[in-house]
Image (cartoon, rainbow, N blue to C red; front, side):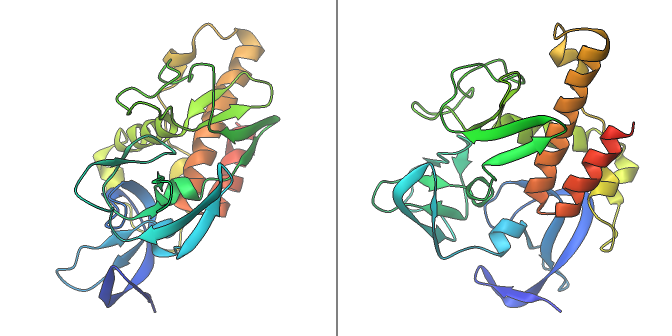
Length: 249
């Protein structure tokens, strides 16, 4: 069983789960956990879920008057940047021909709302406060005019750049023991790996209250990052089970 993708039309791609990180052959961005891959001998081809199942044309709420077309590779030779996360575009992309906007497939598919415990988050394209991870309003190293989308809680306590959340999760994943990186079980959900994922966050968020308040703050932050990763992996069970695991600890 498998499906054909336009970028790899010679062979079918099948869904698998490997804990080891990879680079998506569509968008060229890092990936972990779930993927669609080619099992043919000597063929090393992996795709994110959102790169595998793309829409030929689509729209985004942050660009209400713009139509985006899916491209297997970016236009031209000049470097282009994602208008969502602020990172370079190196592969498959949603491109607006009229306005010149570009969005990574994963950024195009980010949900506009998240609920983590009792904290409600909303995806925003304009944020005035600093990200809790990088301590900056604008992403370091991004081009002029692209601040980077952020998830901001309704209570206004939690601000996280989409890019920073992605980088932190990858860091936590890669910091796990090398033996765990060989995990291969196509029947197990990504949540099994996420439950034990250690996130290097405590030292980053000192000064946000002690005791039960401080513990709650850290718990919300940890749950947010794990839920965010579940969204990137495209596994709804990851989101539910990860939240439950954190709540009962």
